[in-house]
Image (tube, rainbow, N blue to C red; front, side, top):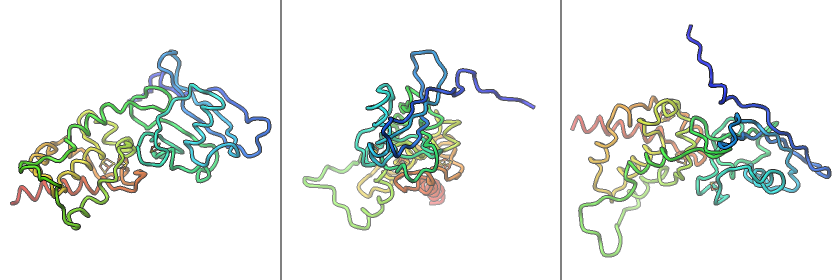
Length: 260
Ligand code: SF4
Ligand code: SF4
Ligand code: FES
């Protein structure tokens, strides 16, 4: 039987432990993945005791508290703190989600905070999303039209506008793609759930006139058809979207245009 071993330098080692401030009465334990590309060391898991009476209720608040009060080198992305920008996606308690909308009190025991899985780590909780955004760019996420641009606005009926519900809300946090086993293995060739959801969003837009071209672009054994409907993407999306359904609709459109 073939045995696969992780490279020794990928093993997560025991890191530093910081005790709670002496006057803290309500603390929670955070176990946080750390890795510094410049020190030649293995990744490690640091343990922080966070004073919840001195800190906001969300996991992102706790990370900011740690950075401000204990270790200023802790590195993570964040911007809006409202679940809108998609920057603070990470793996919390084993689930890909947004640190700014994940309440600490909803997690039992120690709060484990790791970067999104199966992406290169740049430092600590920051994954490399260059490929993810290049794939998003590849689906040409803008309105493409042949007719002349109207003087005032592109009109859309309420019914046509409603077709974009469940699609336009995507904040490109990458939680879905980083939860998809097919994307883990073939992220260079499979577009992944987020980019495919956006491809479908533009095809569904009544104002766009490039549906055929867009379908041609994704009709590929790897770009689209690597999706095996495992549904992790829909399960993990912090905005409650369903990329798997969008992908299924794309596949259906491919079949329909063969028939017509
Ligand atoms: S579909 Fe959901 S999980 Fe995926 S990138 Fe968009 S908001 Fe994030
Ligand atoms: S449904 Fe498709 S895109 Fe979503 S997790 Fe499964 S294989 Fe990946
Ligand atoms: S900080 Fe913007 S989504 Fe969390």
